[in-house]
Length: 83
Image 1 (cartoon, rainbow, N blue to C red):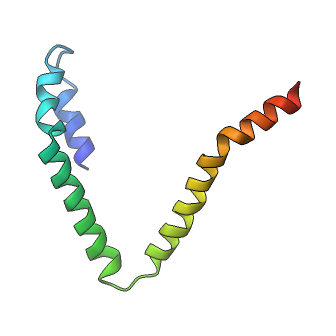
Image 2 (image 1 turned 120 degrees about the vertical axis):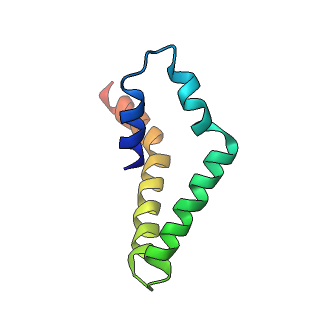
């Protein structure tokens, strides 16, 4: 929803005006507050309710991370097998 609001704000701007409009969103304090807000929302939605979803998030996140770490080596093997 926040991205949609941001898009609606900037879609009528010219390219020259865009950096000045996005600058307040890209400060360190703004990013820190966004991360804190997201973590608080996650805690309220999943941790405080004793849901099983965080365990699934860790499992699937670990699988995706291990796939991404092994991807370059797999690509090298496939490229070598192609020759």
